[in-house]
Length: 226
Ligand SMILES: [Zn+2]
Image (tube, rainbow, N blue to C red):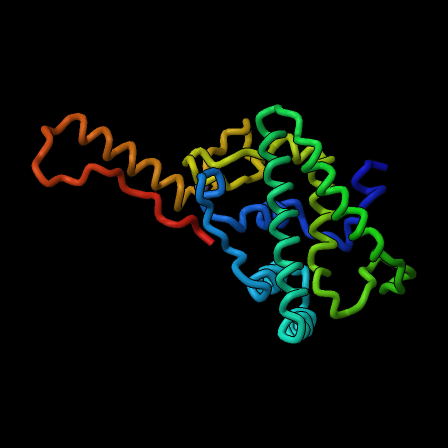
């Protein structure tokens, strides 16, 4: 049995790609001024619902509680972003062969310990299965599977296949499952095309005489795709 299987039952966890999607909820992540996409607790529950971490009914219940307890919901949002940033730094360190910072591993361990407290055995379609316990309206319940799945990702072979988009400073991560590990961009239709356009523009500019009034900046650098 692998570490991942021992710690984290796969039937209650999101896929590794979902963890990467969560880590990518900041645009231009490798820049000095990332664009935050989780700008409210509602955005967090919306993301979690879209990615199967909450049902529509659960998301609605949490959003209702968040309206009654906005300060508690804001704390969970901060917790989510802190967890995400620790995971991002660990993954980017591993991607370039560096040891992750102790503080980031400690941070993730804290989330993992908290999450595992809510893991339960429950009646399933056949015998018993795993389920997330805790109060149905626990504001941070979408973070439990995320913390466990991120730990699973970091301790699996997938962690060695994590790459960062070559369109710096996009900074979005991906799991490179391509043959020969040749993937370069988070998304070919956005960053891949932007890079090609930029190269083409740079080539044309170097071949053509400079014209008065011509824009000097390179194209691209729009917001990352959702
Ligand atoms: Zn990109």
